[in-house]
Image (tube, rainbow, N blue to C red; front, side):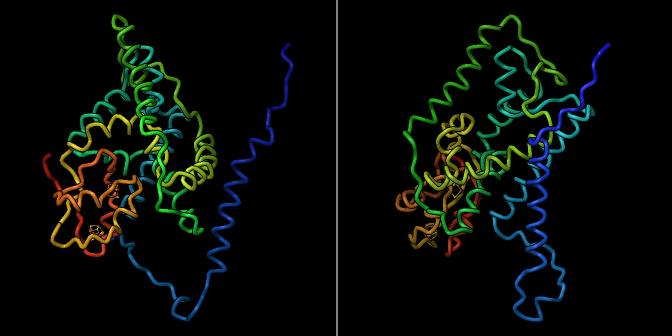
Length: 304
Ligand code: SF4
Ligand code: SF4
Protein backbone atom coordinates (compact mmCIF):
# COMPACT_ATOMS: atom_id res chain seq x y z
CA UNK A 1 0.00 0.00 0.00
CA UNK A 2 1.33 3.39 -0.98
CA UNK A 3 1.50 5.90 1.88
CA UNK A 4 -0.22 9.22 1.20
CA UNK A 5 1.69 12.39 2.01
CA UNK A 6 0.17 15.84 2.10
CA UNK A 7 1.11 17.90 -0.98
CA UNK A 8 4.34 19.87 -0.45
CA UNK A 9 3.51 23.55 -0.07
CA UNK A 10 6.58 25.31 1.33
CA UNK A 11 7.07 29.02 2.02
CA UNK A 12 8.67 29.43 -1.43
CA UNK A 13 5.29 28.65 -3.04
CA UNK A 14 3.83 31.80 -1.50
CA UNK A 15 6.60 34.20 -2.53
CA UNK A 16 5.38 35.01 -6.08
CA UNK A 17 1.82 35.60 -4.79
CA UNK A 18 3.06 37.86 -2.00
CA UNK A 19 5.29 39.87 -4.38
CA UNK A 20 2.48 40.18 -6.89
CA UNK A 21 0.05 41.20 -4.15
CA UNK A 22 2.45 43.86 -2.80
CA UNK A 23 2.98 45.23 -6.32
CA UNK A 24 -0.78 45.45 -6.99
CA UNK A 25 -1.36 47.06 -3.60
CA UNK A 26 1.30 49.70 -4.30
CA UNK A 27 -0.27 50.50 -7.67
CA UNK A 28 -3.71 50.80 -6.01
CA UNK A 29 -2.34 53.09 -3.26
CA UNK A 30 -0.58 55.30 -5.81
CA UNK A 31 -3.85 55.67 -7.77
CA UNK A 32 -5.98 56.38 -4.68
CA UNK A 33 -3.57 58.86 -3.13
CA UNK A 34 -2.28 60.50 -6.28
CA UNK A 35 -1.42 64.16 -6.11
CA UNK A 36 -4.38 66.38 -6.93
CA UNK A 37 -3.14 69.93 -7.48
CA UNK A 38 -6.26 71.39 -9.01
CA UNK A 39 -9.83 70.53 -9.86
CA UNK A 40 -9.05 69.88 -13.50
CA UNK A 41 -6.98 66.87 -12.56
CA UNK A 42 -9.94 65.30 -10.79
CA UNK A 43 -11.96 65.10 -13.98
CA UNK A 44 -11.67 61.91 -15.89
CA UNK A 45 -10.15 62.67 -19.24
CA UNK A 46 -10.10 60.07 -21.92
CA UNK A 47 -7.16 60.41 -24.23
CA UNK A 48 -5.85 57.91 -26.71
CA UNK A 49 -2.31 57.04 -25.70
CA UNK A 50 0.32 58.86 -27.74
CA UNK A 51 3.40 56.97 -28.77
CA UNK A 52 5.41 59.87 -30.02
CA UNK A 53 8.83 58.78 -28.86
CA UNK A 54 10.78 55.73 -29.97
CA UNK A 55 11.27 54.85 -26.31
CA UNK A 56 7.50 54.50 -25.81
CA UNK A 57 7.04 52.54 -29.01
CA UNK A 58 9.93 50.28 -28.10
CA UNK A 59 8.58 49.69 -24.59
CA UNK A 60 5.23 48.58 -26.06
CA UNK A 61 6.99 46.20 -28.46
CA UNK A 62 9.15 44.77 -25.68
CA UNK A 63 6.19 44.15 -23.38
CA UNK A 64 4.21 42.53 -26.20
CA UNK A 65 7.14 40.12 -26.62
CA UNK A 66 7.19 39.45 -22.86
CA UNK A 67 3.42 38.84 -22.99
CA UNK A 68 3.81 36.38 -25.88
CA UNK A 69 6.52 34.50 -23.99
CA UNK A 70 4.26 34.33 -20.92
CA UNK A 71 1.37 33.09 -23.09
CA UNK A 72 3.62 30.46 -24.62
CA UNK A 73 4.67 29.21 -21.18
CA UNK A 74 1.05 29.03 -19.98
CA UNK A 75 -0.07 27.12 -23.08
CA UNK A 76 2.95 24.81 -22.90
CA UNK A 77 2.55 24.01 -19.22
CA UNK A 78 -1.18 23.42 -19.75
CA UNK A 79 -0.28 20.85 -22.40
CA UNK A 80 -2.05 22.79 -25.14
CA UNK A 81 1.05 23.16 -27.32
CA UNK A 82 4.18 21.05 -27.63
CA UNK A 83 6.48 23.62 -29.23
CA UNK A 84 9.22 24.45 -26.76
CA UNK A 85 11.06 27.67 -26.12
CA UNK A 86 12.98 29.35 -28.94
CA UNK A 87 15.38 31.16 -26.61
CA UNK A 88 19.17 30.98 -27.10
CA UNK A 89 19.44 28.58 -24.12
CA UNK A 90 17.15 26.07 -25.88
CA UNK A 91 19.01 26.55 -29.16
CA UNK A 92 22.30 25.69 -27.43
CA UNK A 93 20.90 22.80 -25.36
CA UNK A 94 19.39 21.02 -28.36
CA UNK A 95 22.02 21.94 -30.95
CA UNK A 96 24.81 20.39 -28.89
CA UNK A 97 22.87 17.11 -29.14
CA UNK A 98 22.54 17.51 -32.88
CA UNK A 99 18.79 18.18 -32.65
CA UNK A 100 17.13 21.08 -34.43
CA UNK A 101 13.67 22.51 -34.50
CA UNK A 102 11.67 25.70 -34.66
CA UNK A 103 14.30 27.55 -32.58
CA UNK A 104 16.89 26.88 -35.30
CA UNK A 105 14.64 28.40 -37.98
CA UNK A 106 14.04 31.42 -35.74
CA UNK A 107 17.76 32.04 -35.15
CA UNK A 108 18.71 31.56 -38.80
CA UNK A 109 16.04 34.14 -39.61
CA UNK A 110 17.50 36.56 -37.01
CA UNK A 111 21.12 36.02 -38.09
CA UNK A 112 20.29 36.59 -41.76
CA UNK A 113 17.80 39.38 -40.95
CA UNK A 114 20.56 41.32 -39.17
CA UNK A 115 22.18 41.83 -42.58
CA UNK A 116 19.13 43.93 -43.47
CA UNK A 117 17.85 45.37 -40.23
CA UNK A 118 20.97 45.56 -38.04
CA UNK A 119 20.54 44.77 -34.34
CA UNK A 120 16.82 45.45 -34.34
CA UNK A 121 16.38 42.25 -32.31
CA UNK A 122 18.51 43.61 -29.45
CA UNK A 123 16.70 46.91 -29.23
CA UNK A 124 13.12 45.82 -29.76
CA UNK A 125 12.53 42.07 -29.51
CA UNK A 126 14.96 40.56 -27.00
CA UNK A 127 13.14 39.24 -23.96
CA UNK A 128 15.97 40.49 -21.76
CA UNK A 129 15.67 44.08 -23.01
CA UNK A 130 12.60 45.19 -21.01
CA UNK A 131 14.18 43.99 -17.75
CA UNK A 132 17.38 45.91 -18.45
CA UNK A 133 15.49 49.03 -19.46
CA UNK A 134 13.17 48.79 -16.45
CA UNK A 135 16.25 48.62 -14.20
CA UNK A 136 17.61 51.65 -16.03
CA UNK A 137 14.32 53.55 -15.68
CA UNK A 138 14.22 52.80 -11.94
CA UNK A 139 17.74 54.21 -11.59
CA UNK A 140 16.67 57.33 -13.49
CA UNK A 141 13.55 57.69 -11.30
CA UNK A 142 15.60 57.46 -8.13
CA UNK A 143 18.24 59.86 -9.47
CA UNK A 144 20.94 57.21 -9.59
CA UNK A 145 21.35 56.92 -13.34
CA UNK A 146 24.61 58.00 -14.90
CA UNK A 147 25.38 58.47 -18.58
CA UNK A 148 28.83 57.07 -17.89
CA UNK A 149 29.24 53.51 -19.11
CA UNK A 150 32.19 51.38 -18.20
CA UNK A 151 32.98 48.26 -20.13
CA UNK A 152 34.68 45.17 -18.87
CA UNK A 153 37.67 44.10 -20.93
CA UNK A 154 36.73 44.65 -24.62
CA UNK A 155 37.46 41.01 -25.40
CA UNK A 156 35.08 39.77 -22.72
CA UNK A 157 31.99 39.62 -24.94
CA UNK A 158 33.92 37.78 -27.64
CA UNK A 159 34.96 35.16 -25.09
CA UNK A 160 31.27 34.33 -24.39
CA UNK A 161 30.42 34.58 -28.07
CA UNK A 162 33.18 32.15 -29.01
CA UNK A 163 32.21 29.78 -26.18
CA UNK A 164 28.50 29.75 -27.12
CA UNK A 165 28.72 29.47 -30.91
CA UNK A 166 31.95 27.47 -30.83
CA UNK A 167 30.38 24.74 -28.67
CA UNK A 168 27.34 24.59 -30.97
CA UNK A 169 29.45 24.30 -34.12
CA UNK A 170 31.81 21.79 -32.51
CA UNK A 171 28.92 19.55 -31.46
CA UNK A 172 27.20 19.81 -34.84
CA UNK A 173 30.40 18.63 -36.50
CA UNK A 174 30.77 15.79 -33.98
CA UNK A 175 27.14 14.71 -34.51
CA UNK A 176 27.07 15.31 -38.23
CA UNK A 177 25.73 11.80 -39.04
CA UNK A 178 23.06 11.88 -36.36
CA UNK A 179 21.42 15.28 -36.84
CA UNK A 180 17.65 15.37 -36.37
CA UNK A 181 14.99 17.94 -37.10
CA UNK A 182 11.49 18.29 -35.68
CA UNK A 183 9.19 21.28 -35.63
CA UNK A 184 7.14 19.97 -32.72
CA UNK A 185 9.71 18.18 -30.56
CA UNK A 186 13.43 18.71 -30.75
CA UNK A 187 14.20 16.88 -27.51
CA UNK A 188 14.80 20.06 -25.51
CA UNK A 189 13.25 20.24 -22.09
CA UNK A 190 12.28 23.89 -22.24
CA UNK A 191 14.01 26.43 -20.04
CA UNK A 192 11.02 27.68 -18.09
CA UNK A 193 8.41 25.19 -17.05
CA UNK A 194 5.85 27.39 -15.37
CA UNK A 195 4.61 30.94 -15.40
CA UNK A 196 5.61 31.61 -11.78
CA UNK A 197 9.21 30.71 -12.57
CA UNK A 198 9.06 33.28 -15.35
CA UNK A 199 7.51 36.02 -13.16
CA UNK A 200 9.76 35.42 -10.16
CA UNK A 201 12.74 35.30 -12.53
CA UNK A 202 11.88 38.79 -13.77
CA UNK A 203 11.32 40.09 -10.24
CA UNK A 204 14.65 38.68 -9.06
CA UNK A 205 16.57 39.90 -12.07
CA UNK A 206 15.58 43.55 -11.90
CA UNK A 207 17.49 44.45 -8.68
CA UNK A 208 20.53 42.59 -9.99
CA UNK A 209 20.33 44.46 -13.29
CA UNK A 210 19.95 47.72 -11.37
CA UNK A 211 23.16 46.99 -9.52
CA UNK A 212 25.00 46.15 -12.75
CA UNK A 213 23.64 49.26 -14.46
CA UNK A 214 24.59 51.38 -11.43
CA UNK A 215 28.16 50.08 -11.45
CA UNK A 216 28.80 49.80 -15.18
CA UNK A 217 25.99 51.67 -16.94
CA UNK A 218 22.95 50.79 -19.07
CA UNK A 219 22.59 47.50 -20.93
CA UNK A 220 25.54 45.89 -19.12
CA UNK A 221 24.52 42.44 -20.36
CA UNK A 222 24.24 43.49 -24.03
CA UNK A 223 27.56 45.34 -24.00
CA UNK A 224 29.67 42.80 -22.13
CA UNK A 225 28.18 39.32 -21.99
CA UNK A 226 25.49 38.41 -24.55
CA UNK A 227 26.83 35.89 -27.10
CA UNK A 228 23.98 36.71 -29.50
CA UNK A 229 24.83 40.43 -29.37
CA UNK A 230 28.53 39.56 -29.60
CA UNK A 231 27.94 37.81 -32.92
CA UNK A 232 25.52 40.40 -34.29
CA UNK A 233 27.83 43.31 -33.48
CA UNK A 234 30.47 41.85 -35.83
CA UNK A 235 28.38 42.36 -38.96
CA UNK A 236 25.29 44.41 -38.02
CA UNK A 237 27.02 47.66 -39.06
CA UNK A 238 26.58 46.51 -42.66
CA UNK A 239 22.77 46.30 -42.25
CA UNK A 240 20.62 48.67 -44.30
CA UNK A 241 18.49 50.05 -41.47
CA UNK A 242 20.45 52.76 -39.66
CA UNK A 243 20.19 56.03 -37.79
CA UNK A 244 20.81 58.76 -40.37
CA UNK A 245 22.56 62.02 -39.45
CA UNK A 246 21.56 65.29 -41.02
CA UNK A 247 24.86 67.14 -40.73
CA UNK A 248 23.26 70.49 -41.65
CA UNK A 249 20.89 70.42 -38.68
CA UNK A 250 23.40 69.04 -36.13
CA UNK A 251 25.00 71.54 -33.76
CA UNK A 252 27.35 69.06 -32.09
CA UNK A 253 25.68 69.36 -28.66
CA UNK A 254 26.44 65.67 -27.76
CA UNK A 255 23.03 65.15 -26.19
CA UNK A 256 22.57 62.01 -28.31
CA UNK A 257 25.85 60.42 -27.19
CA UNK A 258 24.96 61.02 -23.54
CA UNK A 259 21.65 59.14 -23.93
CA UNK A 260 22.90 56.14 -25.88
CA UNK A 261 22.32 52.95 -23.86
CA UNK A 262 25.08 51.15 -25.75
CA UNK A 263 27.77 53.78 -25.33
CA UNK A 264 28.00 54.43 -29.07
CA UNK A 265 30.22 57.43 -29.69
CA UNK A 266 27.76 59.27 -31.94
CA UNK A 267 29.91 62.42 -31.65
CA UNK A 268 32.59 60.64 -33.61
CA UNK A 269 30.22 59.98 -36.53
CA UNK A 270 29.04 63.58 -36.36
CA UNK A 271 32.60 64.93 -36.44
CA UNK A 272 33.57 62.59 -39.26
CA UNK A 273 30.70 64.03 -41.32
CA UNK A 274 29.20 60.54 -41.66
CA UNK A 275 25.72 60.18 -43.17
CA UNK A 276 24.75 57.51 -40.63
CA UNK A 277 25.80 55.72 -37.45
CA UNK A 278 27.71 52.65 -38.60
CA UNK A 279 28.44 50.97 -35.32
CA UNK A 280 28.20 47.32 -34.34
CA UNK A 281 26.95 48.35 -30.92
CA UNK A 282 23.96 50.31 -32.25
CA UNK A 283 20.79 48.40 -31.38
CA UNK A 284 18.49 50.83 -33.22
CA UNK A 285 16.70 51.75 -30.02
CA UNK A 286 15.98 55.31 -31.16
CA UNK A 287 16.91 57.03 -27.88
CA UNK A 288 19.39 59.28 -29.69
CA UNK A 289 16.64 60.32 -32.11
CA UNK A 290 14.34 61.17 -29.19
CA UNK A 291 17.05 63.17 -27.45
CA UNK A 292 18.23 65.30 -30.37
CA UNK A 293 16.92 68.85 -29.90
CA UNK A 294 17.55 69.72 -33.57
CA UNK A 295 15.85 66.65 -35.04
CA UNK A 296 19.07 65.88 -36.86
CA UNK A 297 18.69 62.11 -36.45
CA UNK A 298 16.16 59.72 -37.94
CA UNK A 299 15.83 56.08 -38.94
CA UNK A 300 16.49 55.39 -42.58
CA UNK A 301 17.55 52.77 -45.08
CA UNK A 302 21.07 53.36 -46.22
CA UNK A 303 23.56 50.98 -47.84
CA UNK A 304 27.10 50.53 -46.53
S1 SF4 B 1 23.25 55.02 -31.50
FE1 SF4 B 1 21.13 55.68 -31.09
S2 SF4 B 1 19.84 54.03 -31.88
FE2 SF4 B 1 21.95 53.22 -31.70
S3 SF4 B 1 22.02 52.28 -29.67
FE3 SF4 B 1 22.74 54.38 -29.41
S4 SF4 B 1 20.90 55.57 -28.86
FE4 SF4 B 1 20.19 53.60 -29.69
S1 SF4 C 1 21.84 65.56 -30.28
FE1 SF4 C 1 21.44 66.13 -32.42
S2 SF4 C 1 22.35 68.16 -32.59
FE2 SF4 C 1 23.23 67.26 -30.74
S3 SF4 C 1 25.13 66.23 -31.47
FE3 SF4 C 1 23.50 64.67 -31.53
S4 SF4 C 1 22.76 64.76 -33.64
FE4 SF4 C 1 23.90 66.67 -33.29
